Structure formats: C-alpha cells, structure tokens
Image (cartoon, rainbow over all chains, first blue to last red; front, side, top):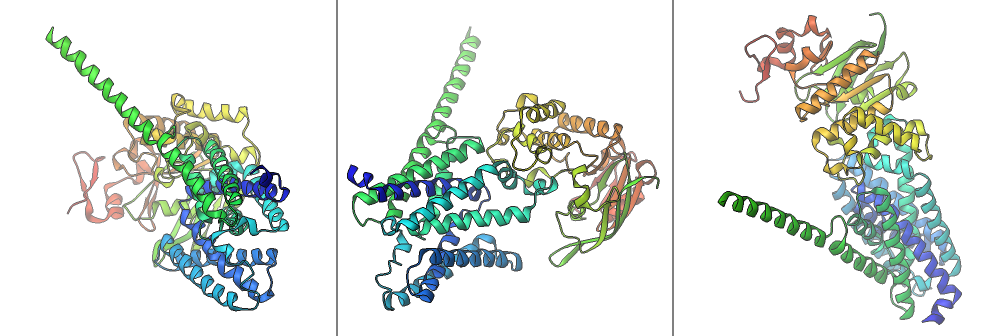
Length: 305
Length: 253
C-alpha cells in the first residue's frame, strides 16, 4: 500500500482529487441553499455530449479540448434550463430533469458512435461515465488541481458576497451587488468544478460529490461558515480516501468509491450530527419528557399533601 | 410640492400577461411617513419592487433625490417581506444585521469589530440584543421582522421602503417598529410602508397612498383618508363599522 502512496504519480492524483473534493464541497453549499441540487446533476450529465463531440472532431484524447467541450456543453445545458424556465410554464426542476436526460442520452448515443470509430475504443472515453482517476495523465491531474484551487480561492475571497447572494439576493442587489455578475460567477464555478471532476469521478456521480458533503455538513452546525468548512473537509476526505481505495485495487472506478466514502460520512452525520442528527433529537426529546414527568410528579405530591 | 425626493412618472409594470401597474404618477416629500394601502393584488409590492429596480418597468421613470435608482441606491434602504428569504439558512441575528453594512464595508473585505458593534447597537435599538446570537430559524415572526428592520437601520439610508413590516407580528413588535418609524421621520428620513391595517393608518402615518393598479388618491392622511376614497380603492367590498375610523374588508360576500 505504501508503495502506491509513495509513487509520485498516485500522490499527485490523491492531492488533486482531495482538492477537487474540497472545491466540490464548498460549491455544493451554494447549490444546497439555492435549492438547486438537481442543477449540479443536470449540468454534469450535460457535459457528456461535449466531451464526445470534441473527441470526434479532433480524433484524439486531448484533455484540455475535451474539458472545453464539456464546459461548453454544460453551459448550453444551463442556458436551456434557464430559457425553458423563463419562457414556459415548466418549473425549474422539471426543466433540469429534461435537460439531464436529453443531454445524457445524446452523450451515450455519440459515445457508441465514437467507440466504433478508429481508435475510439481505446480512447478511454468510457471512463468519463463512471470516472477513472488512474486513467488521468500528469497534465490532467495538474490542470484539475490548479482549477480546483482557483475555485476554492474565488469562494474564499468572496465569502461574504456569496453568503448574501444566497441568503437574500434582492437585498444584495439593493446594496449594490450585481446579481447578474454573481450569477455569472456562480455558473462559472459550478461548471468549472463539474468539468474538472468528470474525468476522475464520472458524469453520473459528480453531482453526489457536490451534494453529499453539503448535506452532511448541515447536520453539524447552525453557522454557514462552519457548514462550508465542514463540507470542504468531508469533500476532501471523500476525494482522498475514495481515490486511495480505487488505487489499491487496480482498475476500480474512482467515482464510485469517492461517493461511497461521502455517503458513509453522510450516515455518520445523519445519526450523530450535533445539531440535526437523529440521536441528538431523540436524546433531547427524552430529556424533555423526563423534565415534564418530574414536574407533573412534583405537582401531584404537592397536591396530595 | 416643495421638496419632492421621490418623483415617479407614468410608471407601468406587468407580470406575464397581466398589467399590474399603469400610469403611476406621484411625488413624495422629504420627512414624510407614507402608508401604501390597497386590496390584495393592487400592485403594492410590485410598485416598490419596480421603483427599486427589482422588477422591470414597462414604461415611465423613477427619480430619487433627482437621480436614477442606480445613482441613488446607497441612500435607499429596503425591508422586503419576511417571507422573501429562507429563514432556515444557517446564520444568527447579528450576522443578518451585519449584512446591512456590506455595502459600507466594501466588497471582498471582511466585517471588522466596529461593524459588529454597529450591528449590535441596531439590534439593541429594536430590543433584540438578547437574541443576537440566536439562530434565525428559532426567532418568532415578529423577531425576524425586527432583525430585518435592524438590518435596514444600520444602512443609515435617507429613504426607506418597507413591505408589510407589520404583517403577522405581535403587539410588542408593532409598537417597537412604529416607534422606530416615528423616530426616523423625526430626524428627517422619509419612509414608505406597504400597510394592510386600515384601522391604524390615521394613528401611524401622516401621508397615505391609495393604490389599485394605479394611484387612486395620494396626500395627507387627515385630508384624504375618507370612506369615499377607501371605497374607491377597495371597490364595494368595504363596510363601515361603528366610528368613522374603523373599517373592515369583507372576505366573504
């Protein structure tokens, strides 16, 4: 096991999936409070046609161009969701569902065409579906690491702005924050996080990497800052541990293990969470019940005297 | 009018197919406390939102202090309806009030101890200092409303817009809010309030603006707050109850 860790390539993969996890955890807190969890799922599925189309165009696996294709395709998905929501009576979540399935279906169809083409079969494009961190070359890993750091940086320096943008956008606008600007930044960090994650985690499971840490963090705190820090920690741990497990057993899909670790952390939070966990609620209820019983007993004995 | 600081001309606004507001024209003088009254769906909230650029205007112009909204927004405070935000959001009362200072703090900068102190003082003014570190979801409706008002106070604006600050609050909160509004007026600030309770209009406000998709009447409460104008605004569904200042809107016909 240590030999795998000490291998510098694995070390880098581990570091970058951990950074990706941190970024996804933080951005996930925004989508959680914007009540747009399905958005990250729709957009990550919407990246697939872009990946395959840019592969079909250039005929080889050039990561930067594939990721660019993924980003464009996700942005088109985001614009379509917005357009459907504003110009028809279809609700936002229905339009997200539509875009998710249509884009993903298109992606899978194009993928089968690409796999039949020369060299397509060995291209490793299939790893975009379930995620395969081991299939990433060094330059991919470093791109992912740097972009994840950039996302984290943007989230940290604008923390106060993000908070008011999420909590009360109308008020934010009143005191001079540009909502249009914030919407652009929000979509940009969301799409960036998704796009850099799809190669390691896969388009299907990428959303879980954003949603699960934020939901888990919610069980522990009543402070937005601490929620973001916890989600970052949960995301980072899931990214690193998931990658490690998939590296030990060769060829195991990374995304699946990252999500399993994240879900494990979720179950721990669900039960033991300090603020909203099941256990604390049960204990509080029992305590209240005892206090109530004692007070009625005292009343009864006093009344009997 | 001597010193109008709000000048609205021919304002119109719509939601999808329906025009909600049309031909809205009025001027408001500095230092006045105005109630905006009208039936449900009359466009009261829409009027405020359109004036503050939160809802697109179909036509017309709005000037504050002789300037368009974007140039005057630093001098304007807005208290939205309580239901406009998610109170489950993980934060405490002091933090929400501090948000009122974000414009002054400057973008991308952190609030300092001075800002926290200012926010705390605003909470004190609203009688909410005990609840400074209380999670906002655990505040009652009236307390949430006071937090919103405290957030507007720290902005130190010259002109305030409030959307139903007295809706669903208890008597203590209503008193606290009205004391603050009177105080704002006494130091020369201008306040416009969307108001639902016709019985308290004459006690609380010196000006009243009757709205039903357009201005029905606008002026000093003592002069224009009459049964006739109320009936013109609310249609036939208004009845007089006992003395002349008591009115109820009948929900059932």
